Length: 365
Image (cartoon, rainbow, N blue to C red; front, side, top):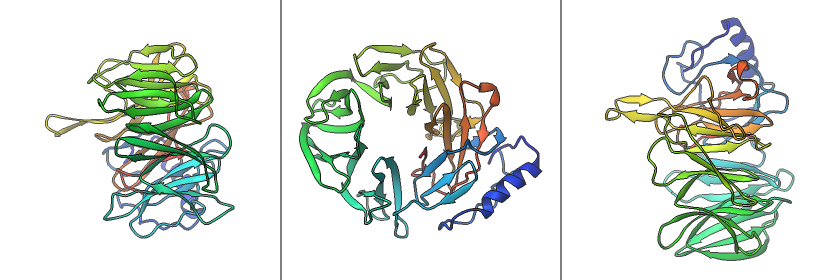
């Protein structure tokens, strides 16, 4: 699937180690076309084969969940997770363990549990809920939507409810921060709002934006674009502490980002732009990733990343390094790029998890 730029013997040594040093995981055989001789189709990563930095582990969601240590190419199961045939799990690492949102064939209901490695069995959190971890401690915020309102419970790691409050309309918690709980809300008039709430009561501390689409939420700011802008929209970053905003102009012809991630130090904002169909779906313009220097305002495209139509790269950070994942119909690839050292180029990590394009993701653990 990708164009290789290092000698073939190096690829054999590196990925030979990966293939023989895995924990047993139920997984399909790799597609026959995978490997150095793969064709030029999308998605595609072009870079240098390399192990990840020490300590970089990634969490894979989807039909074949697993944890991959990219520094040695070792993969293993997610502790405490048991899936029935055909089930898939979307996974979120939290201080108390791992939140798993599980769905199966023939149903649209999503069953969410907390996996605690040292205290099985899984703690049930609800069906069709949204879960985010508390800013401090091991509590979780669990949002349950009902007709015309949303109930938000602050839940301990053992499943006991600490407190509960209700908001009108459809409320989606996005991230709990030192400044408050960031949430998106759609009210009776269908006006999308980004709000900063008191996590204990749900009272609004600040209206961050109205009529916007959230792209990324960091510990100190939220990034969003206009809900009425079709192409090449500026990305607005609003500080949580005081509500001050700054617009960042994107290069012409780049399209709008579908997702984003702030770096831990708040210096960078990574954006994922999905591929696009053109000419009646006969042509695909590959998607890509770019990084905004939030102080300077400059935008740099991540080299060697191309995604399929209607799919953007997964984005997460490991210290100052951006970790990206791309997916085909059957497998994923993981890469790393450090914006402060662009000359290093894209590093393709020893991780090739099986999966499915629509439901699989990879994030830094």
